[in-house]
Length: 294
Image (tube, rainbow, N blue to C red; front, side):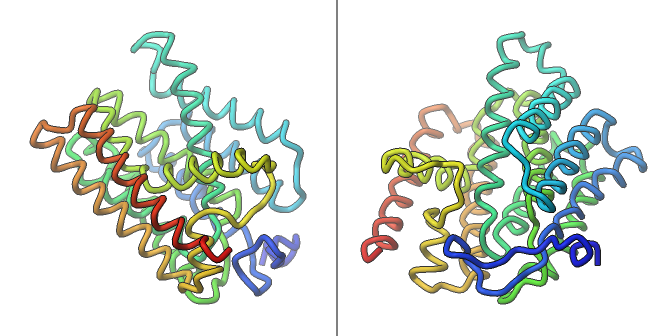
């Protein structure tokens, strides 16, 4: 009803992967879940403020597109709140800019990857479920469960041939920051950087797509249809839901492998790099196949 009232809709264009006018902003469920978690005492005020801030700015952007400056400022303030909450400075002040840049990069990459039905919510669910069953995250289980419930509700409206609603920036940006927070928390607690493999599928597609667009001298801030999942859905005509399930399934397999290797204490830097190299190689082969007639 709110989306109809303020004309928060996504109209198909040459850059879109859908063909029907669809309500946008259904991902507002995610920041609402964080607020509920705060009221119930499951999450801190700092993280809640951070996610509400980026959600509000993104919601306004969904209604009336904003310039880069207010969005960037909101992200910077939100990242500062997250860093304050995680007490990263305890690890050394030099970690602050590194973690901040990684979080900003991850948030934007996750947002860029939100382009077909189901891909964002399924990928988020894989991450949430994986985090939930790690012993180091036991104190975070209530909040992870609340967010998982929000995802399941959103899945009902989004994971279908013709989606009833899209997450919009309000959903994808809020979810990205939420997941980024728990990733940094997990790594700082365990001192195991190998957990970054939990985000490898999205990370590889986003980074290599950006590299490819820069190589072609394209504006990486403009809308496009050059992610691998977009080629699979648009040019190769694979069902959106099938592609989304494929991305989620691959990431879940990588997550299970990562957990097993960490439990066996064999996930060294070299092993992690090897896994990434193999994944990148497979990605490039599939991308070459998907784009050879484009």
